Image (cartoon, rainbow, N blue to C red; front, side, top):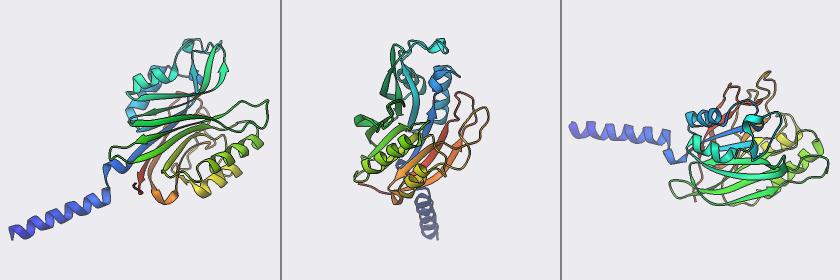
Length: 260
């Protein structure tokens, strides 16, 4: 009888483990447009990130040693280094333009070891528009598997540029052999053609809640995407209603289903 009871307990535990999955397969990803630090201190933002314990954070509008007249409290600051310190993570910076005595661009924070990092310029068909970028890295997870994680920030004021950037992303990752997570500010609603095309190939791991603006939330333009779709399961997502920027942070918990 005792042996039978022991076997039943073991079987129950195995079933629970199967439902829960391997903890190494669960990944938390956050995305936040910083609004160039106008609305909160780097300490506040870093501690907010730390509170949610993400594995990866995609950051947009990241300054490095700039001097902005309307944001003097952030002048001559290295955003990604300070945010890495306050969040307890590693920081990676991808400058896209020179600006106001320094650089401006996108960044990644990570808790995982990285193999390599690339800062890629996105198509720029309208010269008067801002140069946009794609910061990507290969990261080693605790079980030894490799995934790619990338951050981007699409053009806000020109649909032609946005379409070209979306097409570049689609083609760039078409033959990548690793599972990929792409997060950022796409400056496009879910009904926009560029998002419709991307979500045909990528799993949208975020819900329907608006992410912009923080003062009057009315549209979703920040996303966490993953591909190939069959390799990922979206478990939970949340838009965090805190006014540390003109965007709300968005965070998603996703489960990896493919292994190398």
